[in-house]
Length: 72
Image 1 (spheres, rainbow, N blue to C red):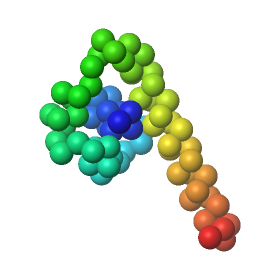
Image 2 (image 1 turned 90 degrees about the vertical axis):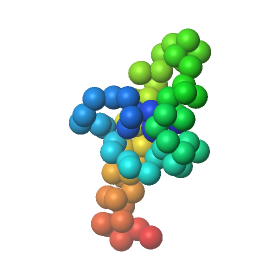
Image 3 (image 1 turned 180 degrees about the vertical axis):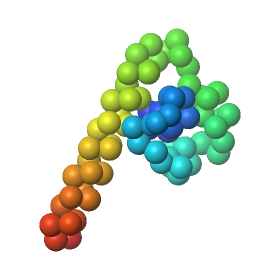
Image 4 (image 1 turned 30 degrees about the vertical axis):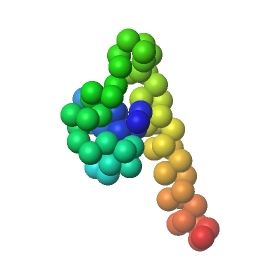
């Protein structure tokens, strides 16, 4: 959900651009996801969604690097 919210709510350029993430998070539309987000419950939500995006970006970069070294 954090990764999907980052794609939808944060300004470009996004740390991690992923056009499929909202669907993977289980939401049929952007409106459905926005309705599910409760800002009062998620007081640190902006920082958390960027942290999740950064963590995923790092992991994907490391995977790509390992694959160029021949790791399968």
